[in-house]
Length: 292
Ligand SMILES: [Zn+2]
Ligand SMILES: [Zn+2]
Image (tube, rainbow, N blue to C red; front, top):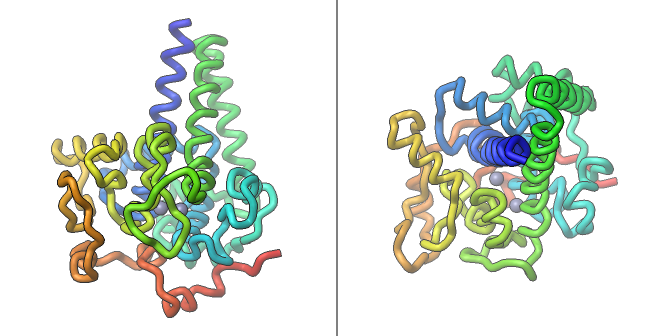
């Protein structure tokens, strides 16, 4: 039983932090900077819970912010609940071709590891991810035995489910609440936030996509940010982006435009997740293929 529990906790923690601090807040939004080996550590944590390659994940997510709950959003529940959970991967309504990947994620194409994991795209990245995940678990079985493998599998499946809940439940108004009246359906959902280490404060996140912190009210626990904040205090994480907001106070007033502009200037990649406007949407309108 001990090997099962140890493997479960390790797989779940590494996987969920990998998705949150690796794929999401790190690569997709560039909310902070980490030394490259530590960035890879988190990214690999996500990769080893079947999240697919970083370029696929980040491109899908940047489009999600650009077209939240509008045509062009890869996984809005407006296209069906099942679609927002898993159907968007097996039967996508938004198809991204290679040229579009390069336009959406130029930063990731410059990184040799992320480029290699992309495997030229066209579905090969998904097969590579599956093969590496199977080989990884064969190695775990050989080294630590069947109970460790089972614990790892259970923890990995749990971590895999966390972002699926964010994509679906956190865009369904009946499950949560909004601190900000964003133009999309994003919600803060406490049980998703607990399971996903803070990612479920999704309405806050849609209001401030580049903020490293997603939990904003005092009771909105954000374990991923706690980890990041510790890394920052240790001098390991740098350029941690936060909105100029009275974090920790009891009230959370909607911010003025001036306050939002206190966020550091985004680089080219971040422009894809900048606050939405019809003008900027049309600039990359060709990036989202029309729905089938
Ligand atoms: Zn969302
Ligand atoms: Zn995001």
